Image 1 (spheres, rainbow, N blue to C red):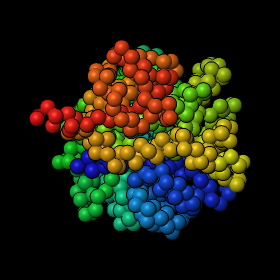
Image 2 (tube, rainbow, N blue to C red):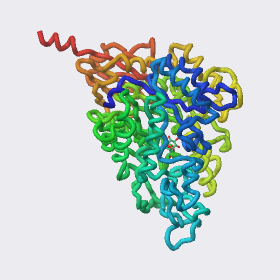
Image 3 (cartoon, helix red, strand yellow):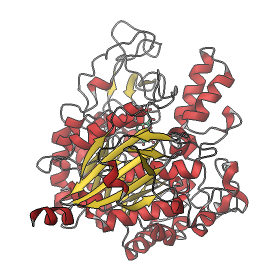
Image 4 (cartoon, helix red, strand yellow):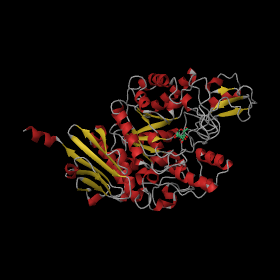
Length: 578
Ligand code: TEU
């Protein structure tokens, strides 16, 4: 079932940073509307729109105060309908971000819930008394020991009613209690509302966190960490599959058109992904795995280490093989929660263009559905933030606050965040070389990366050798070539420390993908190298310089070289048959 998106490519729009039509420095729906032809030229099939709902914006729209509306800063429902029609007219689907693990603390549901212990909506969220024997509201009195993903405890004390509520993300993002059937019914009704409006599906934010062990027990503690790990009690929780099966019955099954569903599933395992995508019970089309995003973690996500390619390759191969028969892979290097891919996994200096194309090739030639995050197709880079004050992201700011309070050196914290902050991906999209990169005629809400004069869409579209055109070719190739969409994956040379090599096979059609993840020339002992040397080039990031040479049975790959070669065994088979 998931394989129905095998030939599709998804493009993620982070609306506040995509295009600003009204000059308030903040991206909006009419801004996107003005860029739909750009999307059509890139050739993508599906747009995933990060949240556009009304929000107090503590977590950039992932704290929603009204699921049914459009935040006035983005425009109106009429603008939304116009955008949807414009995308559909170009054969592009639109999926919405569905953020239903939590709401904003400004949502009417939470306002009612916090108003009194006897309010009918009290149980829509997790309210608990202080730990027995403690003074409510003092450190250590929280109902359990869980830490929040965004620093500090996962509980906030509400003096009005004398209880705590649970928030696994920011304190302004209280977790919804999915145990309560009325909560679920309200969410399903809201989802049907958007589908009735014509949207084509959902990207489901942290959907594997919605079922919590209702006893909310303490989590394991880790030496050196102040809070316990709640994760074992709410990731892939006891009723997750039941809820998703119900959602399927109550929502998706009621529509007879193809709807696109992708679960964002931190810490998901291959086995869990198979189950979540099983067309029987849950039936998600695909999920986002996080394993490859953690390949370069040191002690934490703010302690990124130089990439060990062998580790990354082993992760890719485990997921490619693990979801070969059941489930389906979402392929991504980047999104609004990750630093820029070319800065993180490539070389954003001398080899920026070539390494950005290499990353694209290594990912888009895998089996699955690729996701392109806005600006990735231009090879946009991390941002040289000048001070901690320039950062807006709640996760980064909380991290900095906690680190500084613990005595960390501010310069060291800034260096960590320059590499790892989510704000790297959130600065405005670069459209052209005019002030503010053509994003806005006003003052952008987050500074524009100073390299926009060189790296921008207008320049990239005009240059046939740009990263943009490489992405365009990859998107088109996936659509036209069944071996890219469906072919079986087999990794070669798993122990090679800088070359990622794999084949894709569909019947008699074979592709070889070779990617040199280094700025050095390297040799790769690919089986049948001689045969491959005579094969046709499908795509390369060395353009007119042609295919890599084979010498003594080895491919010699140039710095950051990525090449895709094609052979057909059809002729070979018929010759040997005569
Ligand atoms: O992200 C969930 C998630 O697990 C992380 O990637 C998260 O961003 C964080 O970095 C964990 O340390 C989703 C959204 O994509 C993210 O933007 C939101 O902040 C989060 O959920 C809460 O809605």
